[in-house]
Amino acid sequence: MNQETLHDGSLTESGRNEFLEALASQIDKLDFLVQAMVKTSRLETGVIMLTKKTQNMYDTLAEAVGGIFTKAAQKQMDVRVDCPETFLVSHDRKWTTEAIFNILDNAVKYTPSGGEIRVEVRQKKEIHKGYSSFIFCCSDTGIGMSEEFQKRLFEPFARV
Image (cartoon, rainbow, N blue to C red; front, top):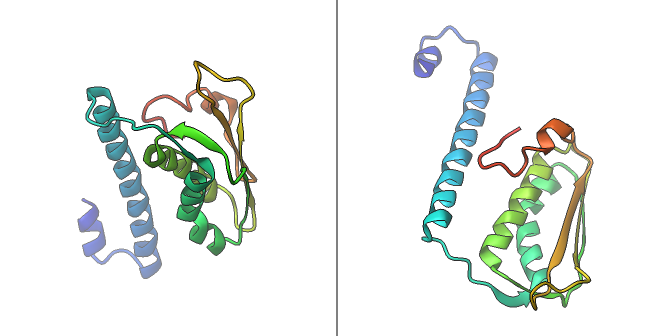
């Protein structure tokens, strides 16, 4: 049906462009959901194993921020990062980077041009079961999220 609409010639050039942008947005959403389902399934079945080791959190954070830097620069955003350069914590770098990147990517998507994103990572004071842990805080000047949707934030596949 979508192909027919594009091929029948009834859309103007601007109408076709709007249609294609909407279609691309839907494809992105479907891709996100499929990727999330695959990762969740792999985690639940033990196919993906977290490999934690003590390593520098600053380097992990730098890798995640590097993934959004170009998009943020294109939108003339100010990205501020506060993390001790020598902060060692036990974590799986690959999956921690991906989780932080996803949060930052959403911040870039939903913050208007000229906005600001702030990231802070600090060590928690208490040690749990012999492991140090950290607090990751991200704030932005974006549109925000209602309390109703905040409650669903950690539900699998939730999108708001």
